[in-house]
Amino acid sequence: MTQSEQLFQQARQVIPGGVNSPVRAFRAVGGNPVFIKSAKGAYLHDEDGNRYIELINSWGPMILGHAHELVEKAVSDAIQHSFSFGAPTRREVEMAELIVSMVPSIEKVRMVNSGTEATMSAIRVARGFTGRDKIIKFEGCYHGHGDSFLIAAGSGAVTMGVPDSPGVTKGVAQDTLTAPYNDLEAVRRLAEANKGQIAAIILEAVAGNMGLVLPAEGFIEGLRALCDAEGIVLIFDEVMTGFRLSASGFQGITNVKPDLTTLGKIIGGGMPVGAYGGRDDIMNCVSPAGPVYQAGTLSGNPIAMAAGYAMLSHLKDHPEVYTTLEATGTRLEAGLRAANAKAGKHYTINRIGSMYTLFFNEGPVTDFETAKASDLKLFGAYFQAMLKRGIYLAPSQFESLFLSTALTPEHVDAILAAHEQSLAEILA
Image 1: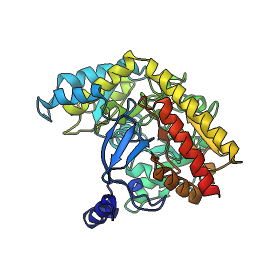
Image 2: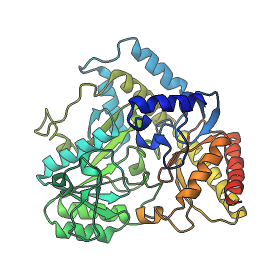
Image 3: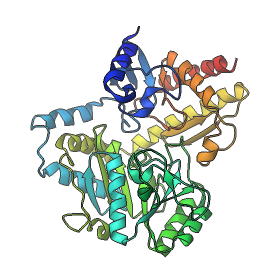
Image 4: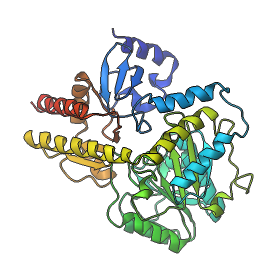
């Protein structure tokens, strides 16, 4: 029995399902999870001494690779002054100023402890600001495990959502309306059928939780126009894309500005952290400036702020990071497509910058329904084939992969060689 297998057996005795987040259980790909001991640069090392080139990067924040010396030093220096104060610090102010300087739509920002906390808070503020109760979200977009987001909807424009998880009440569900991603007309119908009742539209502007799915031409622009016309707060969930796709996130490469933005992952350099921010008039509704209550003892944690400040400062001062990531992504995508064609397959590859997904699906993937048409059994076999060749992928077809500047051309060559060999194995 391997160390990972032994640890998983132990974990199941004391942790639900043996993991602290469901995707880690490997249920979607078969087998048992690999337990990680350490990471550096482009590599993960497991408890059994195996080394992997990895393409998750802690689900996004490790843009510079694992344990980058810049972030390590910032954390080491901050630890000397204690771990938490529960009181204001200079670094919180400097961090907020840095975020405001980098993201044009953010005029004020509030620090929290996770992406889920950021999205939950943003929805509450939007409701408080508008005096309305309902929200619109999109099928396949994940905004954390807040009750309002765990909803599946019927197909009719006026159909209320039903809870998609036990523990979510019907009362919460009835205020959540769901539309297909990239279907602007469906959103318009929902807005018309619930006129004057919708507080916010929230979306992953680039979806990363049904696999990577890009917004169709005109989709984001249409949502902005609708929100302006109907007095609806437009919220971009940039927990994945914020500071990854550009130094201003997704909104830095589009001409659309949201009213509120949620952030996470990257702004802590890998430490647990989140934030939400936006227009001054909306953010001034947040306590103690306004009546919408939100608090957190560990919000603005000095260690997380130090790590995040080091990371964001580097990204702001070194735009070549994004040029490097784009070059790596372009090279990897071209190699994957060539290997797929050689195998007689034309699987869909969706990519933007340093995020991508290979779908085992030869049709275009533009929303959750087309993503679900992927061959999940084949993906599971592919995941295991890549893993045994030393490539660590997300253990689900419905997740984006993330590149880092630690990936060299030699790493890309190794990934492509493993991909070609794995395809030959699973298609034999």
